[in-house]
Length: 250
Image (cartoon, rainbow, N blue to C red; front, side, top):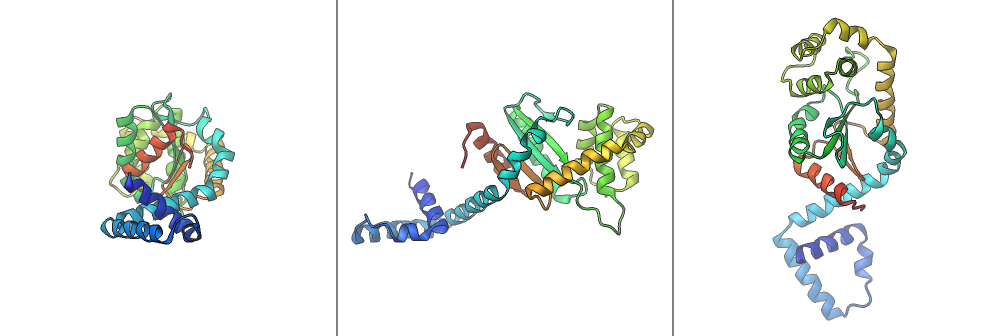
């Protein structure tokens, strides 16, 4: 109980220190006693301050990005053409913006799948967000994204996605097609489907939406009314899922 109280006070002190300083209903002696208890507790448990700072950052992220998320939510969560991993009827949806060439995305992928598979009631929607291509280099992020969309036409998106995210090799054009072949895709058909202009249009639409929301890197997650920017680990994702499941808006 005291931990929750101190955490709330820490949040208030960080977000609105004047509110505590100007509290007129507390007698000076009582105020001093309260301040001493809080100070002692924080000195013994400094992680509380870090928790408060992280919570403040979370709330700031929501204030900046959630209005745009809500603008695009139906498209992001209910697009019938989008591939779905996990439980298609799940009660919580995770939307992930990722790039196959993003090392953080690939290292974080096992944590995402641990949550999705362990929970059993999560809809997981990976969204192509190929932002790592440079004008001077090969467009390998875009090529990978096209291959994934084309793999869906052969009913092999999940297999291709998992293989790409689990691959320990550098992503090259040859590697993309080797991985595609390894999961049973017809590579000739894949290449033909990748050339479809509608495939690229789907990807550029998602790119525009992600950038409009405010994602500037990968991975990025939308989980209910929570937003996770970066590979913050299993516990952070589970916290967001639990919050979404409870319908808690903060």
